[in-house]
Length: 351
Image 1: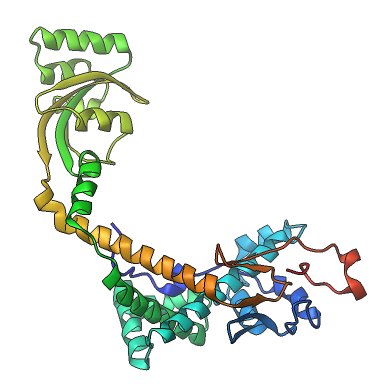
Image 2 (image 1 turned 135 degrees about the horizontal axis):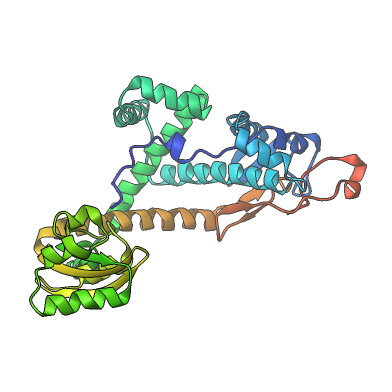
């Protein structure tokens, strides 16, 4: 279940690995067909995003060796264009968030940012670890503050939208019904593992004639660790073992023997020795919290999508074009250098 507030710093969650080299060609040209000057990367409503802002985000990862290797092999420069578009998308999204928050009367005060920083420091285990993460990220103090401010504004918008994100009792019941077997049932089981289906059927035949399960496990099971315990595996919970075994064990009643069940390990004969199921009353609060968090995330995503569709966004075509439906800057294929007037080295055609 998603926690209400991810304790990882926004500077880590939103970190994009970038290189400064890919931006140099963008700085070479003068005006663009869209009328945006060379120093402007995009205009969001009435707010300008400068090429310098994009360049500084590129510089954060100038020492990223893995990406540097990928870019060296990027003969068509398409990866550079995609990275530039990702950077600008992040900056446009942050600008839309700030503008939308202002319309809702939501602010990020100095005290808000300080509290958010303290929260992250606690989540990371102390000031030293926080500073280490910041150094590793490559962000400047000003960029860290920008990320913290964006986190505060996002949380403020989320709180404002929560009023419209209601979870009904019927939705809780339906979630429980759909996920009961996978999440809220636990069984205790033991098994006998053999190499062939024929051997598993012989085990079932002997059990049917009254043989002791524990004794047979110690005698014939090739799972030596559990065989020493009479085949006992302890509690089986969803996600702990391979799917075929899990389905058979969780789907059986207490005292039931099932098999042969084939997995990559061989053929299993399984006995469910105990079964426990969380009731709806026991887990309803947990389910409601999980569904509410999902509703809050959906509400935020829908809100940001609306901001993107309704905004007037103009992108310097050297970075690509703005797609309001996906709320992304989409990189265009680079124009061959021979086709560029005056020997300019711009990286894309017009939007």
